[in-house]
Structures are given as structure tokens and as C-alpha cells.
Image (cartoon, rainbow, N blue to C red):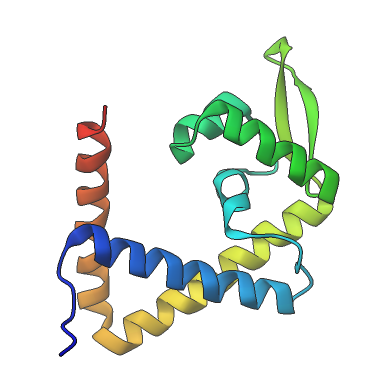
Length: 146
């Protein structure tokens, strides 16, 4: 007999992996077939102005070395470039290229469609309440992390 898991970790992982699978499948269909969910640790936190790798590591929860390797991959694929940080010339900003900006815009649109589907399934008010609670739970969990 199969039961539905109620453990927060299991449920969170199921949502994350299913969301990533759908997102990256749809983005591959829209012209970005070489990117993988691991690249989201960089691309999900970028904007047109760019960010320092240390900021990307802090925001994504990944080690700086992991982010560095992902930036190298994304640079080789043509999605980001490194530029001097105007605030501190010793530091580098990771800046999306035109291809990177296209990926970011398309991923936001796909995510909005996915969320709209969830809201239609459970009702807009229930989905808004779910997101509100999830934001609070995620913030609390981050505070409790070492």
C-alpha cells in the first residue's frame, strides 16, 4: 500500500524536483536545451546588473566553490560573463548575457504559468495562503541552519 508522505523534507524535495523537471523541459523546448537545474543556483538570483559570486553563494545556499564552477560552465555556454564590479575593481560581477537574460525572462514566465496552474487547482486564496506560509517556513528554516 502506497501512502502520501507528509514529511516536510520529502514533500519539499518532491515539489522542487518536479518543478525543476517541468521548468527545464519547457525551457529546453524554448531554445535552452543545454541548461540543467544545477544552473539555477546562479541564474535564479541574477538580474541585468549582475551579482558577485559571494552574493550568489549566500543567496542560493551553495558553497562559493560550487558557484564558481557553475559560473565557469555558464560562461562557457554563453549565458554569463564576468565584469569588474564598479563598486570594487578587485571584485567581479557575474552578469547575464543576452542569452542569459532571455533564459531568465522565459523561466520567470514559465514559473508564473506553473504557479497559475497550481492556483487554479487549489483556488487563488488557498494558493496565496500556501505561498505566504511557505515563505515564513523557509525564512525560519534558513535562520535555524548553521
